[in-house]
Length: 392
Image (cartoon, rainbow, N blue to C red; front, side):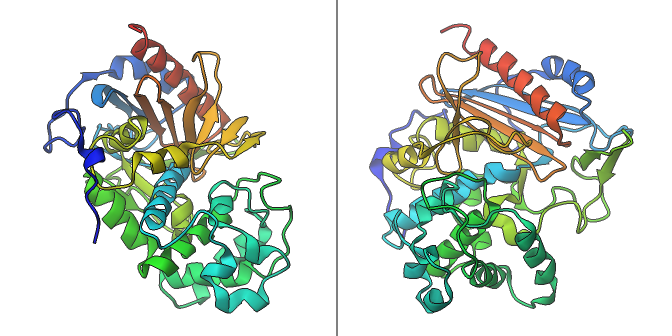
């Protein structure tokens, strides 16, 4: 049974973004976004700004498929990529507050039956290290790609496949001493998801729906590709090929990463639903929904663990500090570091920027992924942030 926490319900009515269907507050910023379609070579782009829990600006421009006249809308589903990691960290926080896990719960604690097969040191890897990319375990390498390819021959449910990934991964020697090095690690988040599955008795896929999508009212949120098989009913992901041509991807096996990697980021949702999630984090979990985790837990999830040198790939954090599914990034257009994360499955791109001091959240999504698109979304973030803070 979930415990209602009164401290989280001390809200001002009307501040929540969870509005009736079809009702959208704020001002459209399509005119601000339009120029970036050409300068960034983007098929489409959507963005929203939330200030102190109020949606102030929103917009969506462009097309669902490059070269086609299929306009996007603010209700269209875009892929979230690794920005979903913060949701996995929040579910982990729920398990911790419910006494089912601890930040220092180890792989040997949660999977004692695998202890004898674990390579030296692997059994001592903790949940926090997995969520902060400091586990020292092998990351997104050839071995993980082989496991995902071979998973098609393993006839199991997704939670069982994640456990299979755990069984195969704990045999591998560590590549770094835990907590002493940082490496972006989707394998690690998948294993953290398996830990959550073991202690909860439910699959991560069930939990993300029950514990995040439903209580937050994220009606457009889902798992896997944002479009439906055989339809262009959402922005298709795009890739700029070596010959300069842009290829779009209909829903199918190559349109998204393996669903086994769900805890690391295989989610989609609309820009407005993304804004709802971001705003809750900007307010430190003090606005609706009321019974997720304590503000202290939100603060812990946001607290930096390691100073990093970014990989500079779209969808991975740049230089700064990394927390748990969140990073802290310094930019020349903000007076202090902002809470940030980027997400990409290689064909889509999403960014979330949060100023916790001013309670401002900015979310931006596009249906293409490359360095130019990444820089363009940063340019949009700068413009929107400067406009949002002009009155401060």
